[in-house]
Image 1: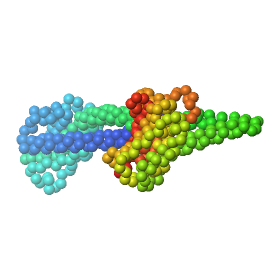
Image 2: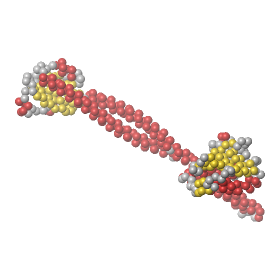
Image 3: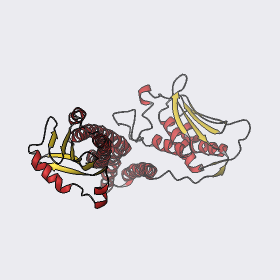
Image 4: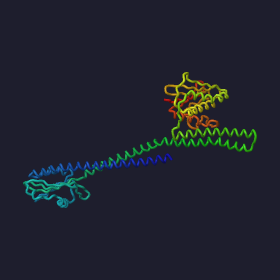
Length: 423
Protein backbone atom coordinates (compact mmCIF):
# COMPACT_ATOMS: atom_id res chain seq x y z
CA UNK A 1 0.00 0.00 0.00
CA UNK A 2 2.82 2.41 0.88
CA UNK A 3 4.58 1.71 -2.44
CA UNK A 4 1.35 2.42 -4.33
CA UNK A 5 0.89 5.64 -2.37
CA UNK A 6 4.48 6.67 -3.14
CA UNK A 7 3.89 6.08 -6.85
CA UNK A 8 0.63 8.04 -6.86
CA UNK A 9 2.05 10.97 -4.92
CA UNK A 10 5.17 11.00 -7.07
CA UNK A 11 3.08 10.92 -10.25
CA UNK A 12 0.78 13.67 -9.00
CA UNK A 13 3.63 15.92 -7.88
CA UNK A 14 5.54 15.22 -11.11
CA UNK A 15 2.53 16.19 -13.24
CA UNK A 16 2.11 19.36 -11.19
CA UNK A 17 5.82 20.21 -11.46
CA UNK A 18 5.88 19.55 -15.20
CA UNK A 19 2.76 21.66 -15.70
CA UNK A 20 4.28 24.58 -13.80
CA UNK A 21 7.56 24.28 -15.71
CA UNK A 22 5.70 24.02 -19.02
CA UNK A 23 3.71 27.17 -18.29
CA UNK A 24 6.87 28.96 -17.18
CA UNK A 25 8.64 27.76 -20.33
CA UNK A 26 5.83 28.98 -22.59
CA UNK A 27 5.80 32.34 -20.82
CA UNK A 28 9.58 32.61 -21.15
CA UNK A 29 9.52 31.78 -24.87
CA UNK A 30 6.73 34.26 -25.46
CA UNK A 31 8.57 37.05 -23.66
CA UNK A 32 11.85 36.18 -25.38
CA UNK A 33 10.16 36.17 -28.79
CA UNK A 34 8.51 39.53 -28.12
CA UNK A 35 11.83 41.01 -27.07
CA UNK A 36 13.56 39.65 -30.16
CA UNK A 37 10.76 40.90 -32.37
CA UNK A 38 10.90 44.36 -30.85
CA UNK A 39 14.68 44.44 -31.20
CA UNK A 40 14.41 43.32 -34.84
CA UNK A 41 11.80 45.97 -35.64
CA UNK A 42 13.80 48.63 -33.83
CA UNK A 43 16.94 47.78 -35.81
CA UNK A 44 14.89 47.71 -39.00
CA UNK A 45 13.42 51.14 -38.30
CA UNK A 46 16.84 52.58 -37.56
CA UNK A 47 18.25 51.24 -40.82
CA UNK A 48 15.37 52.27 -43.07
CA UNK A 49 15.38 55.74 -41.57
CA UNK A 50 19.01 56.03 -42.57
CA UNK A 51 18.26 54.65 -46.04
CA UNK A 52 15.43 57.11 -46.55
CA UNK A 53 17.60 59.98 -45.37
CA UNK A 54 20.35 58.98 -47.81
CA UNK A 55 17.88 58.72 -50.70
CA UNK A 56 16.28 62.05 -49.90
CA UNK A 57 19.55 63.99 -49.58
CA UNK A 58 21.60 62.40 -52.33
CA UNK A 59 20.93 63.64 -55.87
CA UNK A 60 22.49 60.44 -57.18
CA UNK A 61 21.48 57.03 -55.74
CA UNK A 62 24.48 55.31 -54.22
CA UNK A 63 24.03 51.67 -55.22
CA UNK A 64 27.05 50.50 -53.23
CA UNK A 65 25.54 51.81 -49.99
CA UNK A 66 22.23 50.14 -50.67
CA UNK A 67 24.00 46.91 -51.55
CA UNK A 68 25.40 46.74 -48.01
CA UNK A 69 21.89 46.44 -46.67
CA UNK A 70 20.82 43.81 -49.18
CA UNK A 71 23.63 41.59 -47.93
CA UNK A 72 21.99 41.61 -44.47
CA UNK A 73 18.66 40.08 -45.47
CA UNK A 74 17.23 43.36 -46.81
CA UNK A 75 15.53 43.55 -50.19
CA UNK A 76 15.27 47.09 -51.50
CA UNK A 77 13.10 48.00 -54.48
CA UNK A 78 13.23 51.61 -55.70
CA UNK A 79 10.99 52.93 -58.41
CA UNK A 80 10.91 56.41 -59.98
CA UNK A 81 8.88 57.83 -62.85
CA UNK A 82 11.10 56.40 -65.55
CA UNK A 83 13.12 53.52 -64.19
CA UNK A 84 12.56 50.68 -61.73
CA UNK A 85 15.66 49.73 -59.75
CA UNK A 86 16.06 46.41 -57.91
CA UNK A 87 18.66 45.81 -55.24
CA UNK A 88 18.06 42.21 -54.27
CA UNK A 89 19.46 39.96 -51.57
CA UNK A 90 21.08 36.57 -52.04
CA UNK A 91 17.62 34.99 -51.89
CA UNK A 92 15.36 37.36 -53.83
CA UNK A 93 11.63 37.03 -54.13
CA UNK A 94 10.54 34.66 -56.94
CA UNK A 95 8.32 37.27 -58.60
CA UNK A 96 9.40 40.80 -57.60
CA UNK A 97 6.95 42.50 -59.99
CA UNK A 98 3.98 40.77 -58.40
CA UNK A 99 5.25 41.60 -54.94
CA UNK A 100 5.69 45.27 -55.83
CA UNK A 101 2.24 45.36 -57.34
CA UNK A 102 0.82 43.97 -54.12
CA UNK A 103 2.84 46.34 -51.95
CA UNK A 104 1.74 49.33 -54.03
CA UNK A 105 -1.80 48.71 -52.89
CA UNK A 106 -0.59 49.02 -49.28
CA UNK A 107 1.60 52.10 -49.88
CA UNK A 108 0.58 55.46 -48.37
CA UNK A 109 -1.09 58.07 -50.52
CA UNK A 110 0.02 61.67 -50.62
CA UNK A 111 -2.20 64.47 -49.49
CA UNK A 112 -2.44 67.70 -51.56
CA UNK A 113 -0.38 69.51 -48.92
CA UNK A 114 2.45 66.91 -49.26
CA UNK A 115 2.43 67.39 -53.05
CA UNK A 116 3.19 71.10 -52.60
CA UNK A 117 6.24 70.39 -50.42
CA UNK A 118 9.64 70.15 -52.07
CA UNK A 119 11.00 67.51 -49.71
CA UNK A 120 9.23 64.92 -47.64
CA UNK A 121 9.17 61.24 -46.62
CA UNK A 122 5.89 59.39 -46.12
CA UNK A 123 6.10 55.72 -45.09
CA UNK A 124 4.35 52.91 -43.25
CA UNK A 125 5.41 49.50 -41.86
CA UNK A 126 3.65 46.14 -41.65
CA UNK A 127 4.20 42.37 -41.67
CA UNK A 128 4.02 40.68 -45.05
CA UNK A 129 4.02 37.02 -46.10
CA UNK A 130 5.10 35.75 -49.47
CA UNK A 131 4.73 32.03 -49.87
CA UNK A 132 6.29 30.45 -46.81
CA UNK A 133 8.52 33.42 -46.03
CA UNK A 134 7.67 36.21 -43.63
CA UNK A 135 8.91 39.76 -43.95
CA UNK A 136 8.69 43.04 -42.14
CA UNK A 137 8.07 45.70 -44.78
CA UNK A 138 8.36 49.44 -45.10
CA UNK A 139 6.86 51.24 -48.09
CA UNK A 140 7.64 54.90 -48.62
CA UNK A 141 7.26 57.90 -50.91
CA UNK A 142 10.42 59.99 -50.91
CA UNK A 143 10.57 63.35 -52.66
CA UNK A 144 13.23 65.96 -53.05
CA UNK A 145 13.86 68.72 -55.56
CA UNK A 146 15.27 66.35 -58.19
CA UNK A 147 13.09 63.24 -58.09
CA UNK A 148 10.26 61.34 -56.47
CA UNK A 149 10.86 57.71 -55.55
CA UNK A 150 8.68 54.87 -54.35
CA UNK A 151 10.66 52.65 -51.97
CA UNK A 152 9.79 49.10 -50.96
CA UNK A 153 12.09 47.63 -48.32
CA UNK A 154 11.58 44.08 -47.09
CA UNK A 155 13.45 42.48 -44.23
CA UNK A 156 13.38 38.68 -43.92
CA UNK A 157 12.34 37.39 -40.51
CA UNK A 158 14.32 34.18 -41.01
CA UNK A 159 16.92 35.23 -38.43
CA UNK A 160 14.20 36.11 -35.94
CA UNK A 161 12.60 32.70 -36.37
CA UNK A 162 15.96 30.94 -36.25
CA UNK A 163 16.86 32.66 -32.97
CA UNK A 164 13.39 31.85 -31.66
CA UNK A 165 13.79 28.17 -32.56
CA UNK A 166 17.14 28.15 -30.78
CA UNK A 167 15.55 29.68 -27.67
CA UNK A 168 12.71 27.14 -27.84
CA UNK A 169 15.16 24.24 -28.17
CA UNK A 170 17.34 25.57 -25.36
CA UNK A 171 14.44 26.22 -23.02
CA UNK A 172 12.87 22.82 -23.79
CA UNK A 173 16.13 21.05 -22.97
CA UNK A 174 16.37 23.00 -19.72
CA UNK A 175 12.68 22.36 -18.96
CA UNK A 176 12.93 18.61 -19.62
CA UNK A 177 16.16 18.32 -17.62
CA UNK A 178 14.69 20.31 -14.73
CA UNK A 179 11.51 18.21 -14.87
CA UNK A 180 13.46 14.96 -14.67
CA UNK A 181 15.61 16.23 -11.82
CA UNK A 182 12.61 17.55 -9.91
CA UNK A 183 10.62 14.35 -10.53
CA UNK A 184 13.48 12.27 -9.13
CA UNK A 185 13.74 14.70 -6.23
CA UNK A 186 9.97 14.47 -5.72
CA UNK A 187 10.19 10.67 -5.60
CA UNK A 188 12.90 10.71 -2.93
CA UNK A 189 11.12 13.49 -1.03
CA UNK A 190 7.81 11.60 -1.07
CA UNK A 191 9.51 8.37 -0.07
CA UNK A 192 11.39 10.13 2.72
CA UNK A 193 8.21 11.89 3.89
CA UNK A 194 6.29 8.61 3.97
CA UNK A 195 9.09 6.71 5.66
CA UNK A 196 7.61 7.34 9.14
CA UNK A 197 4.25 6.10 7.83
CA UNK A 198 5.91 3.01 6.34
CA UNK A 199 7.79 2.38 9.57
CA UNK A 200 4.59 2.84 11.55
CA UNK A 201 2.75 0.42 9.27
CA UNK A 202 5.58 -2.08 9.56
CA UNK A 203 5.61 -1.77 13.36
CA UNK A 204 1.84 -2.09 13.43
CA UNK A 205 1.98 -5.25 11.33
CA UNK A 206 4.73 -6.68 13.51
CA UNK A 207 2.80 -5.64 16.62
CA UNK A 208 -0.37 -7.39 15.48
CA UNK A 209 1.54 -10.51 14.45
CA UNK A 210 3.48 -10.65 17.72
CA UNK A 211 0.40 -9.85 19.80
CA UNK A 212 -1.56 -12.61 18.09
CA UNK A 213 1.26 -15.03 18.74
CA UNK A 214 1.63 -14.01 22.39
CA UNK A 215 -2.12 -14.07 23.10
CA UNK A 216 -2.53 -17.47 21.52
CA UNK A 217 -0.43 -19.17 24.22
CA UNK A 218 -2.46 -18.10 27.30
CA UNK A 219 -5.69 -18.63 25.41
CA UNK A 220 -4.66 -22.18 24.62
CA UNK A 221 -3.77 -22.81 28.26
CA UNK A 222 -7.05 -21.29 29.48
CA UNK A 223 -9.13 -23.32 27.02
CA UNK A 224 -7.37 -26.61 27.81
CA UNK A 225 -7.53 -26.09 31.58
CA UNK A 226 -11.16 -24.97 31.44
CA UNK A 227 -12.01 -28.15 29.56
CA UNK A 228 -9.99 -30.19 32.12
CA UNK A 229 -11.89 -28.56 34.99
CA UNK A 230 -15.14 -29.99 33.62
CA UNK A 231 -13.66 -33.49 33.77
CA UNK A 232 -12.14 -33.35 37.27
CA UNK A 233 -13.14 -32.54 40.85
CA UNK A 234 -11.52 -31.69 44.15
CA UNK A 235 -7.85 -30.76 44.39
CA UNK A 236 -7.14 -31.51 40.75
CA UNK A 237 -9.91 -29.15 39.65
CA UNK A 238 -8.48 -26.46 41.99
CA UNK A 239 -5.09 -26.96 40.39
CA UNK A 240 -6.52 -26.32 36.91
CA UNK A 241 -8.40 -23.32 38.27
CA UNK A 242 -5.22 -21.76 39.66
CA UNK A 243 -3.43 -22.23 36.33
CA UNK A 244 -6.36 -20.66 34.49
CA UNK A 245 -6.45 -17.70 36.88
CA UNK A 246 -2.71 -17.20 36.50
CA UNK A 247 -2.97 -17.18 32.71
CA UNK A 248 -5.93 -14.79 32.85
CA UNK A 249 -3.87 -12.43 35.01
CA UNK A 250 -0.96 -12.68 32.60
CA UNK A 251 -3.23 -12.01 29.63
CA UNK A 252 -4.80 -9.03 31.43
CA UNK A 253 -1.36 -7.54 32.06
CA UNK A 254 -0.38 -8.13 28.44
CA UNK A 255 -3.57 -6.50 27.10
CA UNK A 256 -3.13 -3.53 29.44
CA UNK A 257 0.40 -3.01 28.14
CA UNK A 258 -0.81 -3.34 24.56
CA UNK A 259 -3.50 -0.72 25.14
CA UNK A 260 -0.93 1.62 26.68
CA UNK A 261 1.36 1.27 23.68
CA UNK A 262 -1.49 1.54 21.19
CA UNK A 263 -2.73 4.71 22.84
CA UNK A 264 0.76 6.21 22.86
CA UNK A 265 0.99 5.50 19.11
CA UNK A 266 -2.21 7.40 18.37
CA UNK A 267 -1.83 10.18 20.91
CA UNK A 268 0.71 11.37 23.42
CA UNK A 269 0.58 9.21 26.54
CA UNK A 270 -1.88 10.87 28.90
CA UNK A 271 -0.39 11.76 32.28
CA UNK A 272 -2.18 12.66 35.49
CA UNK A 273 0.50 14.81 37.07
CA UNK A 274 0.42 15.93 40.64
CA UNK A 275 2.91 17.14 43.24
CA UNK A 276 4.35 14.22 45.17
CA UNK A 277 7.47 13.21 47.05
CA UNK A 278 9.67 11.02 44.84
CA UNK A 279 10.89 9.18 47.96
CA UNK A 280 7.32 7.98 48.57
CA UNK A 281 7.25 6.33 45.13
CA UNK A 282 10.46 4.46 45.91
CA UNK A 283 9.15 3.34 49.30
CA UNK A 284 5.87 2.10 47.74
CA UNK A 285 7.86 0.14 45.18
CA UNK A 286 9.99 -1.37 47.97
CA UNK A 287 6.92 -2.46 49.92
CA UNK A 288 5.45 -4.03 46.78
CA UNK A 289 8.50 -6.21 46.07
CA UNK A 290 9.98 -6.79 49.51
CA UNK A 291 8.39 -10.19 50.13
CA UNK A 292 8.74 -11.31 46.51
CA UNK A 293 12.49 -10.61 46.50
CA UNK A 294 13.06 -12.11 49.94
CA UNK A 295 11.14 -15.23 48.89
CA UNK A 296 13.69 -15.65 46.11
CA UNK A 297 16.52 -15.32 48.68
CA UNK A 298 17.82 -12.08 47.14
CA UNK A 299 18.89 -8.91 48.91
CA UNK A 300 16.88 -5.77 48.27
CA UNK A 301 18.53 -2.41 48.88
CA UNK A 302 17.03 1.06 48.65
CA UNK A 303 19.20 4.18 48.40
CA UNK A 304 17.65 7.60 49.05
CA UNK A 305 19.22 11.07 49.24
CA UNK A 306 20.35 12.23 52.69
CA UNK A 307 18.22 15.35 52.38
CA UNK A 308 14.60 15.16 51.37
CA UNK A 309 13.95 16.15 47.77
CA UNK A 310 11.40 18.86 47.04
CA UNK A 311 8.01 17.74 45.71
CA UNK A 312 7.95 17.23 41.97
CA UNK A 313 5.18 17.28 39.37
CA UNK A 314 4.89 13.79 37.88
CA UNK A 315 2.32 11.08 37.27
CA UNK A 316 2.86 9.06 40.44
CA UNK A 317 1.09 5.92 39.20
CA UNK A 318 2.94 5.92 35.88
CA UNK A 319 6.34 6.31 37.56
CA UNK A 320 5.45 3.54 39.99
CA UNK A 321 4.45 1.37 37.00
CA UNK A 322 7.79 2.09 35.34
CA UNK A 323 9.78 1.09 38.44
CA UNK A 324 7.66 -2.05 38.92
CA UNK A 325 8.45 -3.11 35.37
CA UNK A 326 12.21 -2.62 35.90
CA UNK A 327 12.31 -4.38 39.27
CA UNK A 328 10.10 -7.21 38.02
CA UNK A 329 12.59 -7.81 35.20
CA UNK A 330 15.47 -7.65 37.66
CA UNK A 331 13.79 -10.22 39.92
CA UNK A 332 13.08 -12.50 36.99
CA UNK A 333 16.63 -12.49 35.61
CA UNK A 334 18.54 -12.52 38.92
CA UNK A 335 19.13 -15.84 40.65
CA UNK A 336 21.80 -14.81 43.17
CA UNK A 337 22.97 -11.54 44.66
CA UNK A 338 20.98 -8.39 45.12
CA UNK A 339 18.71 -5.77 43.60
CA UNK A 340 19.15 -2.09 44.38
CA UNK A 341 16.69 0.76 43.81
CA UNK A 342 18.21 4.20 44.15
CA UNK A 343 16.93 7.77 43.85
CA UNK A 344 18.98 10.92 43.31
CA UNK A 345 18.69 14.35 41.77
CA UNK A 346 21.05 15.96 39.28
CA UNK A 347 20.32 19.52 38.24
CA UNK A 348 16.70 19.51 37.01
CA UNK A 349 16.42 15.72 36.67
CA UNK A 350 15.24 12.94 38.92
CA UNK A 351 17.36 9.84 38.47
CA UNK A 352 16.04 6.38 39.34
CA UNK A 353 18.41 3.42 39.10
CA UNK A 354 17.53 -0.26 39.24
CA UNK A 355 20.69 -2.33 39.68
CA UNK A 356 20.77 -6.11 39.64
CA UNK A 357 23.46 -8.79 39.72
CA UNK A 358 21.67 -11.09 37.29
CA UNK A 359 22.60 -12.61 33.96
CA UNK A 360 23.06 -9.23 32.26
CA UNK A 361 22.19 -8.20 28.72
CA UNK A 362 24.44 -8.92 25.73
CA UNK A 363 25.82 -5.86 23.94
CA UNK A 364 24.02 -6.73 20.70
CA UNK A 365 20.66 -6.65 22.51
CA UNK A 366 21.07 -3.38 24.44
CA UNK A 367 19.72 -1.34 21.53
CA UNK A 368 16.74 -3.66 21.00
CA UNK A 369 15.37 -4.50 24.44
CA UNK A 370 13.06 -1.46 24.38
CA UNK A 371 11.47 -2.67 21.13
CA UNK A 372 8.06 -4.22 21.42
CA UNK A 373 7.94 -7.99 21.90
CA UNK A 374 11.73 -8.21 21.75
CA UNK A 375 13.27 -10.79 24.06
CA UNK A 376 16.88 -11.81 24.30
CA UNK A 377 15.59 -15.38 24.55
CA UNK A 378 14.90 -15.97 20.85
CA UNK A 379 13.23 -19.33 21.56
CA UNK A 380 10.35 -17.57 23.39
CA UNK A 381 10.35 -20.42 25.85
CA UNK A 382 9.87 -17.97 28.72
CA UNK A 383 6.12 -17.40 28.99
CA UNK A 384 6.17 -15.13 32.04
CA UNK A 385 7.64 -12.15 30.15
CA UNK A 386 6.19 -11.22 26.78
CA UNK A 387 8.56 -8.39 25.81
CA UNK A 388 6.26 -5.40 26.32
CA UNK A 389 7.30 -4.14 29.75
CA UNK A 390 10.40 -2.22 28.73
CA UNK A 391 8.51 -0.71 25.78
CA UNK A 392 5.92 0.65 28.22
CA UNK A 393 8.67 1.89 30.53
CA UNK A 394 10.27 3.77 27.63
CA UNK A 395 6.93 5.39 26.70
CA UNK A 396 6.38 6.53 30.30
CA UNK A 397 9.89 8.02 30.51
CA UNK A 398 9.48 9.87 27.21
CA UNK A 399 6.07 11.20 28.25
CA UNK A 400 7.86 12.85 31.21
CA UNK A 401 10.45 14.40 28.84
CA UNK A 402 12.90 11.85 30.13
CA UNK A 403 14.87 8.90 28.88
CA UNK A 404 15.81 5.39 29.93
CA UNK A 405 19.05 3.55 29.24
CA UNK A 406 20.84 0.40 30.28
CA UNK A 407 24.44 -0.45 31.04
CA UNK A 408 26.34 -3.34 32.56
CA UNK A 409 26.64 -3.61 36.34
CA UNK A 410 30.27 -3.95 37.47
CA UNK A 411 30.79 -7.59 38.38
CA UNK A 412 27.80 -8.76 36.32
CA UNK A 413 24.20 -7.83 35.85
CA UNK A 414 22.33 -4.86 34.42
CA UNK A 415 21.74 -1.28 35.53
CA UNK A 416 18.70 0.61 34.24
CA UNK A 417 18.89 4.39 34.59
CA UNK A 418 15.78 6.56 34.27
CA UNK A 419 16.22 10.33 33.98
CA UNK A 420 13.05 12.42 34.32
CA UNK A 421 12.97 16.15 33.74
CA UNK A 422 11.05 17.75 36.58
CA UNK A 423 11.43 21.48 35.78
